[in-house]
Length: 359
Image (cartoon, rainbow, N blue to C red; front, side, top):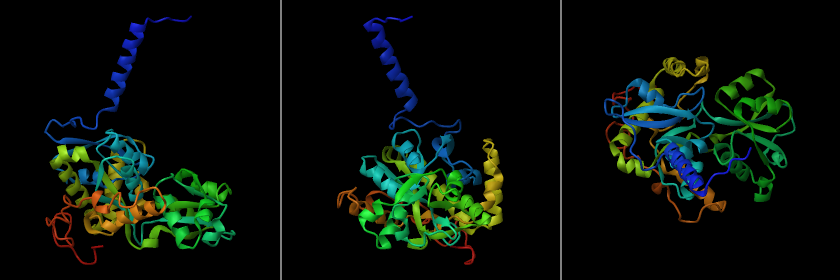
């Protein structure tokens, strides 16, 4: 049976829906929640089966003025930082190229501390079937390459590698990037649904243990290099400067803790955090952790880690020449390993550490 509503009622319902949506989405400029003891609550998206450095900082007791609240899970870096830009969360992490693209689209965000990178032990790699026909970049023309998401780390890195290997723009465009969840990449590669796949962490180690695949190249094309950063919204930083400062110092110290602490101790701490989240995740996954992946002590951001991708986007026609410089998009002002609070070679509390323990 059809129900007919008057124009007035329809208008009132429409206004109510708009109000509910606005309340649910929140406002980028709204006041953040606080705990009973006066700490500023920072909302964020967790990463399934992984521990982010801010979570570690909270567990280690490195925050004095902020408390963390998980409001969901993130499936990708772009999703994580988009949530920051829209005011759904207070911080997020992504590949620096994705951060530059989001800023180019008008989002007012700033990188405040490194979040991940590549070193001798922790990196992303592109793998093919052992004994298969793909041996070089040119062999990928017309082939399918599995990546976890488009517009992020994997896409930028493979396109950069293909260019360095001498492929033309049209040849690079002929390499088909296919979105495949990391959980399914190994199966897709072995079943011939893709010709190459991007693997990292537990997924790479498990695939290599099974045998039958080999490395084509890795994201260590730049050597030891930080690829991603944590971002905050500019208006939030302006209105909550002390909270952001506390967030950065605690996260930087947590990064440093993993850089100078024996691996076994880090793994046990990660297991405890994962189990404590109560999401049914397997804490044993933490056994695959190998290193912080961040080369700079405490995650101090280097200009070239961002400028590289600004230049890349300019060359690709996605950014105007001179639209940004790296200095427009990041700051180390609150990082204790950059602002003089702690010597770069010191530990998470500013204490001396053995040279063998330092990165």
